[in-house]
Image: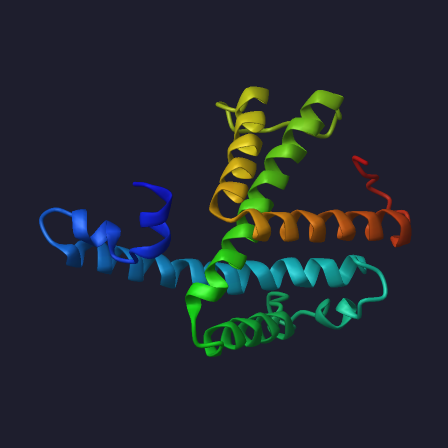
Length: 185
């Protein structure tokens, strides 16, 4: 599909679905629900880990480090991520929020691919991927495709997302205390 069609026609996939457009609607609903749950609970675990490591320093994330007595569940972080999700939903127009979310997800995937590639190229001894199909080419291609898609969808959101990531990286590089596990930078 051309770029303009993907930006303007919100039903483009439903219009070409065979045998019924409802298959697409059900698939999108199930996928959205699954992604929402995964993001709320996955994001809260990341927030809990960031709080425990005090990264970025002095941002007050240590409040989210505490877990429940049973199973160390990050209840505070779950509540916080749920509140962020609710604020996004209450913004009223998800078409305004979706490019921002897509940009940061693509940037996250690009960063994971770049990290795997750099760890592999540097010969870091503790980087031992268990995925038998892993290769440097795969990580490099994944990084390149994510970055291409990021800027293909919207150049300005891409520039903003990459700028935010670089500023955060620079801030953490200069302000974070040394950790026992080292770093790639």
